Image (cartoon, rainbow, N blue to C red):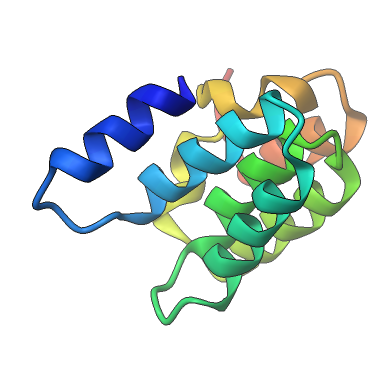
Length: 113
């Protein structure tokens, strides 16, 4: 996956968006490159663009840092980030599905099951 992402980035004229950066961070986490993945999560949070919390949280889930990811998701919900509308079905958050905190977060958004 990491090679595919890097190859795409080298041949593309598109700017690397948050989703691409998050995908790279998840791939890095999956290959044990924890420091690089954490740097991407930090970059997603420090960028000038809004909604970085959701993508940074996805990297943190891949790193096994569910409580930090959940805190960022709560922040995104409080800010009414449009990116939170897809949390119920976003596969990047499958690692949180069994968490009572994640279930409570979704319930607080009043999603219908």
